Length: 150
Image 1 (cartoon, rainbow, N blue to C red):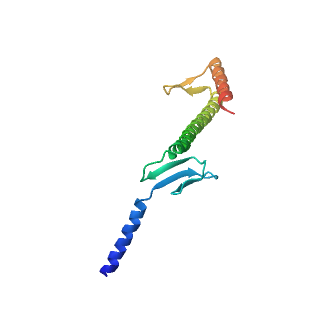
Image 2: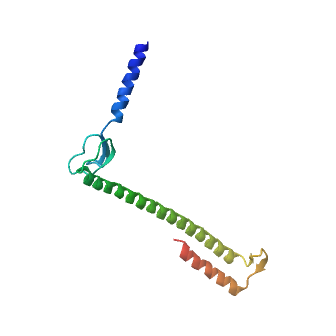
Image 3: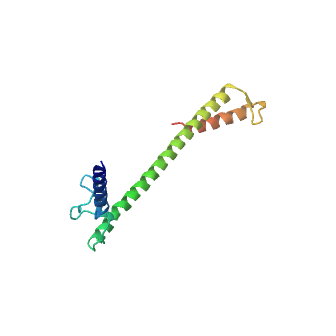
């Protein structure tokens, strides 16, 4: 029993040590646009980034890393552009909703001013509209309908 335990522990330690002492991990995009992580060097001419290394980096890998980091910068730019597009779409939706609400209010006002001669003012008091005031409010409502309703 003890021998089996020691062998199992020894095997686990040797696997862990081999994983820990892996030399370099590379990250790049393949021809289909998929991100690839590997411990083998990427194809020639392919921009890449070094993720993890246990040895000193060679001078040939430094320029390639810079070109690989351009990929990350481009990804950050795309993410910012997507966030900006989402923000614009959200504001456009808010504006559409506001226009719809204004259109409904203008139609309701037109119906009110056309049908009724008495309305409630801002203080909640019922007042009678004279013909000139009523015609002005009806025209104001029609103008608002033209502006806010499609």
